[in-house]
Amino acid sequence: MSTTPGGDANEPQPANPDGSDRMTRRQLLRHTAWFGAAVALAVTGGEVISHVAGSTGKSPAIATGPVLRFAQISDSHLGFHGGANGDVTATFQQAIEQVNALGYRPDFVMHTGDLTHLATPAQFDQVKQMMTALDTDHVFTVPGEHDSIDDAGQKYRAAFGAGSRGEGWYSLDIAGVHVIALVNTLNLRFLGHLGTDQIDFVRKDVAALSSDTPIVVFSHIPLFAMYPTWGWGTDDATQALSYLRRFSSVTCLNGHVHQLFTKTEGNVTFHSGTTTAYPLPHPGDGPAPKPVTLPAGRLHAALGIREVSYRKGQHALAIRDRALT
Amino acid sequence: MSCFLPRSLVTRALSALAAAAALTTLAACGSSRARPVAPAAAAPPAASPPSASPSMPSMTPPPSAAAGPAGAPVSSNAVMIQNFAFAAPTVIVKVGTTVTWTNGDEDPHTVTAIGGPFHSPTLTNGARFTYTFTTVGTFTYMCTIHPYMHGSVVVVAR
Ligand SMILES: [Cu+2]
Image (cartoon, rainbow over all chains, first blue to last red; front, side, top):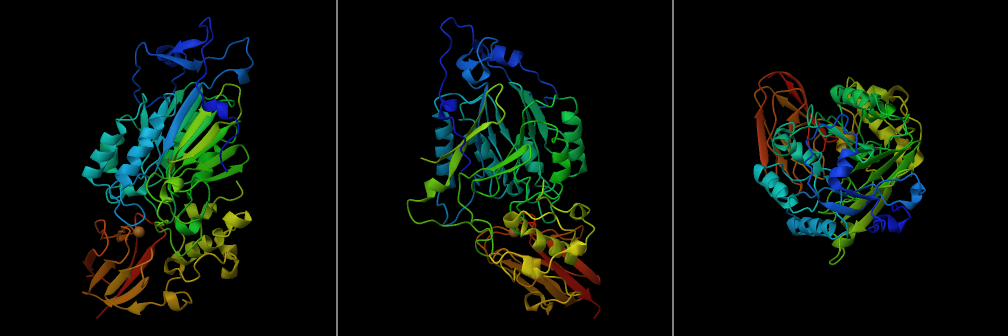
């Protein structure tokens, strides 16, 4: 339901015969504004990415290939043991291999939290080790509440917080898109929570941006009220999102709910992603969001990965969710 | 943003009753896209969707309010964690009592005092946590993994 038409968005685009649209990754990054980049991004020298085409004055924007393509994975819950998935390591490994087999190299891969099930050092080591196999230059993360169970996220930040601000949030610019990664799994009372420091970060972070800058916001818990009874919402998201109202395109991508769900409110589109571990019930289906054990052979269809692409001049980002094969 | 939470919830200064009422009201939001309703004007419980568990203990008002059967405070020094809820959301104990929480769920939970003195480690299936209450008062707690799970211990004088 959240798949956006335009399947060719994900196919590699041939470079122009004369090579004029060809950009190396180094050039791509050089041509990108990095205002506010809080994460050190290494540039792989000399590698030609022929399918990344810059916009040219001649071609209409729609005719150019995507300038940004990334993948989202979520809720791998390494360390989970239960009937809903007998081997979460195997399904996470399959998700990684599926990202690597997309047919192009994503500009980055974002894991939207619940990397681990119990936030133990061994589970953090394992998930970090496994994600080094992702064929991309940048692996980004935000924490889930399972990653910050008992220490307000200290172990998470020790493993994944390098270069982040505050309690783990950050932003960066890539290919003209402004990416904001938020932490809404700390200091919880009923729902997800951002806190005044982080909301202030968002305000300052976007203050200098032009309103036609596409904005992508990552968080673990939904920033919209998907089902507050089960904690599927963020109590102070409205204030953070108020600073994004003036932007023409805002895409919020989250995990936590282990199922696909899309909702548009004004200029903001929310996309809940699925999990690589186990499904949860639909909102209100049963007394609690307990892991759902599916009949044999049906688990993979409930798990998956997400591809996102952006073309210059396009209003909305193209989202494509793929079930685990 | 027709479906976001009332600003008042942000203040976190609400009583447990008001917060529970607000959440009950908001539960209807996903299906009805109703405009936010301030807790003071919260709709009656009938407004909650039928699919939501009507007796979910964490949604039940504290003892000072007209508590339904599921939320009635009980004199007990044992609290089971079952179906993502503290099965006795409010227990009354005498000062000096040791209370034991036991996780009966397959999923992990914590018992974490809100701004208070105790904080369990992550409780996996079957794990227990104990705490001895040495002062009179009401201690509210929650699960940090499932923050909508709340409970309280009312400690009275001997
Ligand atoms: Cu819990």
